[in-house]
Length: 175
Image (cartoon, rainbow, N blue to C red; front, top):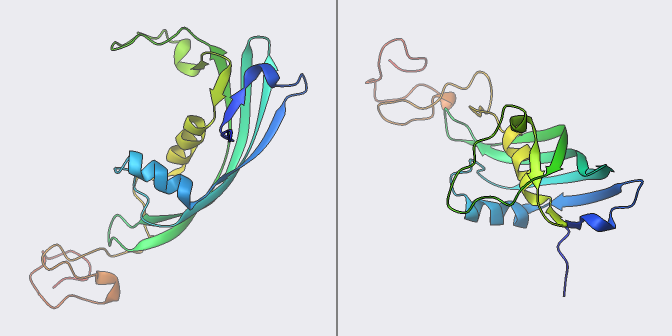
């Protein structure tokens, strides 16, 4: 049986810690997009992740770096464009209680700064997904000077003024 590179058995982390290199390839991103179609990735994506897990008493320190490229759709003109991914992260994971099924648990202000794990197996995939989401721009733009689409006819104003002459005055590229 093949083991998942994303699953780490905590009892097997040596005292000096554990270093892992993981590939976030197109298949990984495609699987993620199938699970969450609202994710705004418009095309090929690939990244490499280096992570280290170190025990600190009962807690775990998860450090890592994700670097690669994503294809996003410009929020103004909808044109796909490639953007770099690059971020380092550090998370303190602490043992937590089993989550309550079907309900919500209130967190104290101190708990809001922590991530919890349960059991002897840690799945790294949700932590890496979280880091990729945090790197995504709120409003992805193919360039700072992107002129967007004509609100009347939908023409890409980066290619020139539209022919409809019906756009609102004051909008760049429209008549």
